[in-house]
Image (cartoon, rainbow, N blue to C red; front, side):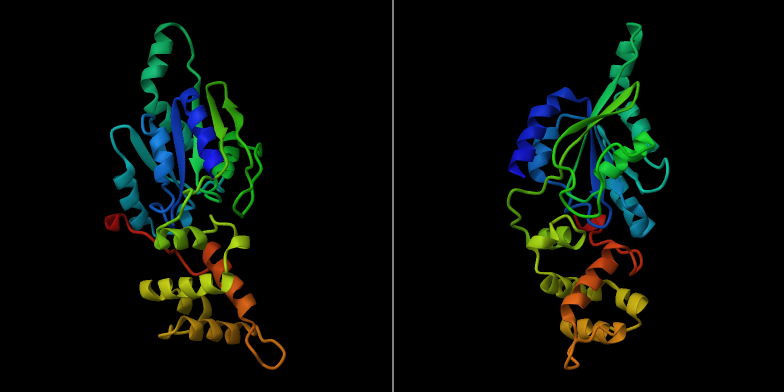
Length: 271
């Protein structure tokens, strides 16, 4: 991650603006303070991606919070055809001065933007959506994009895809958990069982996600709830023991795929 930040810092001088892709379920946790230092002087389009997975009213609060003098935030579901075109229009709006200056000289301006964000936020999917076809590697897991690559969207817009960047050190446990919940931290380095218990504990404080998905009433114990889900799903090992490893993975996958309903982990008025 430190290497990725250095590469971004080196290339930022080449671009006119930044597209900052945030997972709508945890927008605050997706904003990397180390990255902010590199892009502070650039116009920014905040793309609140995976907007279909959260309540629209809650997301509107983040749009208002992130929109300012030199920034604009938009709701986005980059898997929906042509949905990312709003990004192109917002980039041209933020770079209007450059466009007008070039136009006065009889030149059509080419806007160059850098696309940044945490792993698995949907950067490459957004770029492919802008292009109308697949030009970058995508995948529903952290770490698919390995290096920077320029992508020509049209004659007037080029974007630089970058690898996902996390904090070099994740000291805040809540932020670390949020990033693990949404899949921005590689599952290979996370204890899925412990993560599922943390997720159950969090969701039980927020609403009725488990009743919606599994038809069970939350208890006072995440482990009891995990066992209840295993029983409901029939995830049973020999000796009539619950298959908690399989159940843990299923709970996390159900959350990430939106099968528990629309859930936002961070509200704008709390940050």
